[in-house]
Structures are given as C-alpha cells and as structure tokens.
Amino acid sequence: MKEQTFIRNNIQKWERAETIVEQAATQSPATLAEVYVDITGDLSYAQTHYPDSQMTVYLNDLSVALHNTIYCSKREPARRFITYWTREMPQVLYDARRLLLVSLLIFIGSALIGALSQMGDPSYCRLMMGDSYMDMTEANITAGKPMNVYGSMPQSLMFGSITLNNIGVALRVFAMGLLTSIATAVMLFYNGVMIGCFNAFFAQHGLLGVSLSTTMLHGTLELSAIVIAGAAGLALGNGWLFPGTYTRLASFRMGAKRGLKIVISTVPLFIVAGFIESFITRMSGLSLPVRLAIIVPSAAFVLFYYVFWPMWVHRRKMWRQNRPGTETYI
Image (cartoon, rainbow, N blue to C red):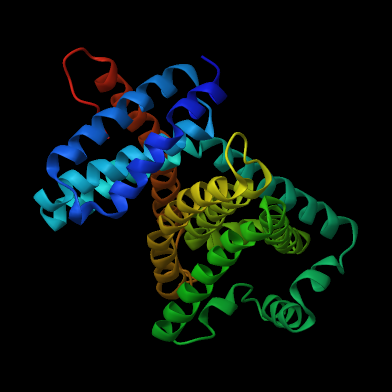
C-alpha cells in the first residue's frame, strides 16, 4: 500500500486518537485500550513499510502519548521520571538521528571555516568576538595567564550567569526553527565559526593545547548540547519546509513536539557544564590526566546517551514488537 493511501485510510482514526488523549480524563479505560491497540498496530505496519517517514514518527509519538495516558496514573512519579529519560527520550533521539548528524556536520564544518579564516586573516577573530574581548584575551596571554577569563567572576555568580546564558543560546538555536531550519543552520554556523576562530587564535600564539585542555573541560558537554539544540531547531524548521503528505500546520506541530523534547534533554548538560566552567575550569594548576579524567567521561556520556542508548532502546522495542505473543513496547 502506498504511504498516501495508508494515511488517507487512517487519518480520521488518528485524529480521533489525538482527541481522546486530550480528553483522557473523560474516557473509559476500555476506550483508551481499544484506541491504543489500533494505533500500535498502525505503528507496527508503518515501521515495517515506511521506516523513515514522518508519519511513522508521528504514530510513535501518538502511541507513547496513549501509553502514558493509560499507565501514568498507575506509576509512581519517580518511576515515570526514570522511564521518560531512559525510554521515551532515547526513542525521540533515535528518530532524530539524521538531524543530529546534520547539525554536527554543520557545526564541525563552520568551525573549520572559522579556523581557516583566522589563519588567513589574524584580525578575523576581532570581527567575530569583538575588540573588548580580544583585548582582554591578548592582555591575559601577555601576562602569562591565557585562560584567566574563567577566574574573573565569583564562582556562584558565574555558575548562574553562564548556565542561564547557555540555556538561552540553546533555546534561541531551537526557536530559530520557527523561521525554517535554514535559520537554525545559520545560527549553528555562526557559533561554529566563533569556536573555530577562537581556537585558531590560540594556535597562532602556540597555546592550542592549553586552550583545548581548558575549554573542553566544560566545552565537551556545552558544545555537544548546542549541536543537539541545533537538531531540535532543524526538526522544528523542517515541519514548515517539508510537510510531506501532511498539512503544513500538522507537520509543524509534529516537528515542534519532537524538537521541544530534544532541546529539553540539553538542560542537564548545560547545568553540569556550567558547574564545571564555574568551579573547575578556573583551576589553572590542574594536570593533564585530571583534565582528561573530566573530558573523556563527558564525551563518553554524550556518545552513550545520544547515540548508543537510543539505538539499543529502538532495537529492543522492535524485538518486543516482532516477538509473537507480546505487547508492543513503548
């Protein structure tokens, strides 16, 4: 069956299911269970025949919403919190895996462009970062304290300021998707160029190792979170640009829900990164092994939670769906 035919034959049922979720408090358990079985059946068919379709992502989200409506009241709040982060969020991340890759490639490519631009024109970093910041950085280098910027503010004040600022950056990258995914890509590009020219500037002063071993203490989580927020913005913006077989509004709603879940996952990363930047990065006397003991686990966590764990959750879900005599796993 063609995808358009499948959608046309079932769209009214899916819209009814959305209404039932919104009015769950007035629905009987039997009705909820019946609709849940119907939607998971459609989801299983869609995953088999249209695995890369937005429609499949939509049905998965609808199945999750129905599942939570039925079982949420039976779960303890602590367990509900755990399952959200260990099952629901990883599935959303798996569905967005291509957007995460695109966001990463944009960021890496723009960082390389920024580095090459600075190497070709030593004044380029001033254009991107501003004269006042560059004057302060050059003064710190001359004084033999190139990373002194991280010790220029009280720790507690710095923690709150940096964390809120970084979360704000992520939300802006995400919100730019309202102007289509191209706007998010432009903002990602801008941030990548700044990172590239900043590190190239330190390389020109023979301080690249010092720069990376210091900034990546917090930057491993912080930059990863910006890339992830970029994927959220791309999901939001693609709803406008590529509605597929849906109306543009319906496609936008799907992209917005998907993107919002992704960007929410970055908040803990920014909080931890803000703590590291405020209380640890400023410690200039840290040895390289100690620095690596922070950087490597941070990178390992990002890879585990955003790449490998979503793959495992998805495979386990598919295995349970295809195993005879078992319920669909959400």
